[in-house]
Image (tube, rainbow over all chains, first blue to last red; front, top):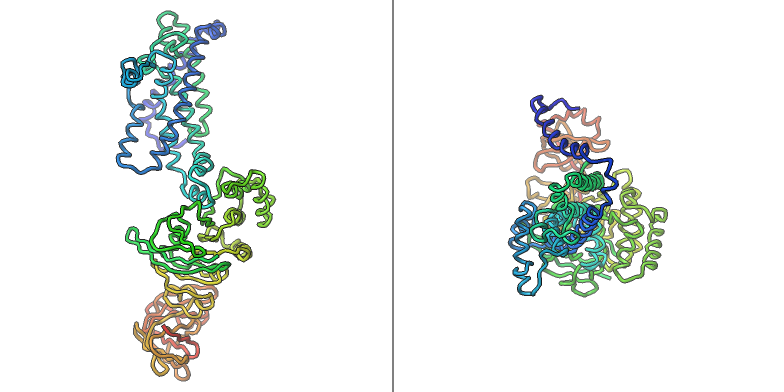
Length: 254
Length: 343
C-alpha cells in the first residue's frame, strides 16, 4: 500500500464506501430467502421481467441502429455547431428522466406534434416503453462509440482506401471492427440503463401490467402492497447489474 | 508504367513545389531532412491529400480520381496492418475489394505470402509478427492488388539497426520484381543508395538535386547532401586553377573548371598541423577547433576558419594535436584530393 495518503482522508473515504455498500448489504440480508424460489416464478414477477428484458433489448437495438451512425457523424463530419449538437446528444444524461417522459408525450402522444399529425399515439403502449428507454439510454451508446472513433487511428482507413476499398467497405471492414470494443461497452451500458429506466417510462408509457409495467415500476408499486416482493424484484435487478459489471470488468476494473 | 509528378501545395506556411519523373520499373528515392515534405508528396501521389499541379500515371492525369480508384500501393512507415485481421486476410483485403471471391482472394494472398517467405504466418495476427515480417506483409498487401505505382514511406525506419541490413537487402529484391514505378521516401542516405536507381533530394518542399546514387555522392549540390555523404562542400568562382569561395577563403583545384563551381573533398583529405607546414600541399589556412566527436574509429573535428572545414583524424593524431576547443591549428588539403564541378 502507498503511504502517501493523509490520515485525515481515511475516515470520510471509508464512510463513503459504507454509504454505497450498506444499502446493498441490507437488500441481501433482508431478502426473504426461504420463499425466494417460489416468488421468483410468480406470474407477476416473470411478466415484468420478461417485459423489461424485451423492451430494454428492443431499445438497445434501436439505439445501435441510429446511435452508431450518429456517433460517426459527430466524430467524422466537420459542420458548424458540432459542439452544440454534441451537447444536445448528451443532454438526456443529465436531464431528469421524468422531463424526458413529458417531452416524449408532447411529440408522440395523442395530441403530440407527430401523434396528432399522423393520427396515432405511442403513449401508454409497449412501443412507448421502448421509445422512453431508448431516449434515455441512447447517449450512453453515442458517447461510447464516438469516443472510440476519435481514439481510432484514421490512417488504417487510409490504408484500406489505397487498397481499393470504397467508403462503405472501409466503414464495414475497418472502422467498425476497430471500434468494436467501444461499441460493445456502449451497447451493454445502453441496455443496463434501459433496463433500469423508471421516470421517463412511467410518465410516457404509464403502468399497465404486461404492457408497460417494467421491473423498476413493479418494484416501486410492490413496495406499498408487498415489500417482500419489492425486495425480490430489486435483488433480480441487482444481480443483473453485477453481471454487467463482471462483463465489463476487463474494460473498467482491470 | 511511368509517373510524372508536378506537385504544388501551400499549407500552414509550408510550401511544396516538387517536380520529378519515375519510369516504369524504376525505383526513385525521395531523400531529405525531416519536414522537407517527403511524406506529403507520397500522400498527394496516393490521393490522400489534394494538391495543385498534376500527377500523371501512364499519361493519364489522376486529378480528381479518388484514392480507392487510383490503384496506388502505399506501404506506411508503421505498416498499418489491420490488427483485427489475420496476415492472410490483410493481404486478401485489397483483392476482395477488387471483387474477387473469398476463396480466390485467399489463394492469391497465400501465394504472395509464400513469395515473401511467410507461409507459416498466414493465420497469425499482425501483433505477433516481428518488424521485418510485418513489413513484408505490408508489401505483399500493397503488391497483391497489382498497383500501377508503389509508394513506400520510410520502409526501414520502424526496424532496429540489427535487422535493417538483411531486411534492406530483401526489400531490394522484392522491389526489383515490381514492373511499375516505385517511389520510396527516406531520410537515410544508405537506404536511398541501396534501394533506389535514382535519388531525388527534397529540401524545404523543393527538389534540390536529382541523380543516380554515384552522381549524388560524387557531386553533392547542397550542404545537406554533402553532410549526408560525408563531404566538405563549398560554392565559389573558379579562375586559373583556383576557386574564390563564396563564404570566404580560396582553394586550389586540379579539375579544369571556370565560372560558378562546387568544390568538394572528404574530411579524411584534411591534414592538421600545429605549425604551418612547408612543402607540397597547396591549400593551407589557419583554423580554430570548434567541436570534437568520435566518428567510427576516427575523430571528427569541426574547424572554424576561412573556409570552415570538417577533418577526420586518427585518435593518435588527435592526442598529439591536443584538440581542445578554441585551439589554433593549420589545415592542409592537397589540390589533387579536391573535386570541382560546375554549379
